[in-house]
Length: 394
Ligand code: SDX
Image 1: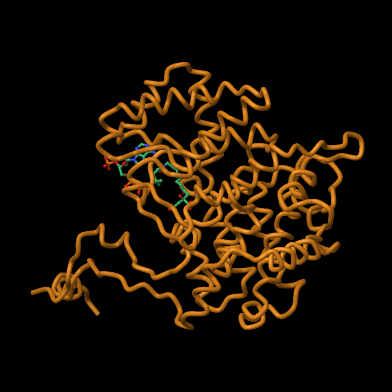
Image 2: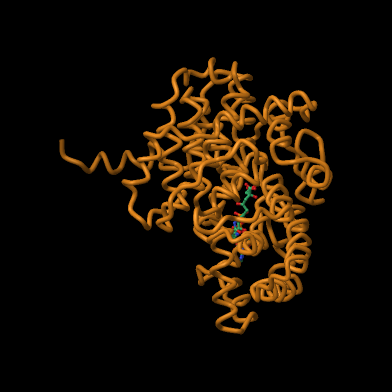
């Protein structure tokens, strides 16, 4: 009789969207990019080939791969005027804030940001974003430690170039280890796309208003920086350090179960995966292998293992299908690579860029309609408000 339909609030959490890019089966723990399982991609491809796959729908031929690599190389330099932007950020500025600001500013430095130009030359747009942003990220790190920036080199692969820009120094040359490059490729591949997560939905929504690609990606960076999303990998390490210092794993597991306690087991749970996140399974295995291979020991890995053991045998976690997600072991590998904790979410953003570009391209190629979700109104009815009005004197 009210004329309003009320739906179960859980309906509000879902919004169907059609895409050909990534397939997830949350019950079975399956993740495929353009139909290819991630387990095959990490064994047989490099990150830049996966970037091409996500954007184009097919892995590149050798000729396409070489052309794309050359585009990455010629688009790896940051405009020198933009380099001076770093002089004006305070030393403690979080690199995600720097990144979202700098990416937005790219629209001022590169003309033809209209959608048609950007989509028609998608390889340049993709290469410019994933290459320049990689340079920006390394420059932000150098700025944060007061070191001079290291420029990209034309003779290095994507991941080797990033590690070199991060850790090379005029007084202490960085030795590029093939194993570190292999691990970084795997981490970037595993983070490259994940269907309609919070930041990708942000990119599709903002992009649908025909905002230029740089501003659209900047919005995605902001969404990803949240502690419940991409910021979780940094939160996991903070949490493991707390548990290590306290020594009582069970205490933290019980805190996470207490609904009156805001503490959550970071790196656990997922809106879609109701089993082990397939990315976390690969990262966990690579974590153990890499630390063994490089004789690098990290006590936090043992803490993580204990947390997982206790949680996965606890009815609260079992009943809610709460398992480790992509963020649970990632931070331990980044630490082993020498990446500082405030750069962990930047690493996630670098990897997710091709996924965002692929969704933006798919969205603008499909419709020019702006994203405008309809809501289900569950507020007051006219009958409920008439009384209030009747009591007011005009
Ligand atoms: C990413 O969407 C994507 O694909 C994201 C991502 C990607 O690649 O883009 O996979 C990357 O963001 C991974 C998630 C990283 N975030 C974290 O690790 C933060 C910790 N996790 C939780 O905050 C939570 O699990 C979320 C945010 C990830 C998912 O939350 P949901 O789906 O909204 O689940 P929920 O909050 O409704 O939880 C259901 C129940 C609740 O308990 P009850 O109300 O049933 O009693 O499970 C509990 C929650 O309290 N719960 C947790 C928990 N996660 C859920 N309890 C303790 N610790 C947790 N981590």
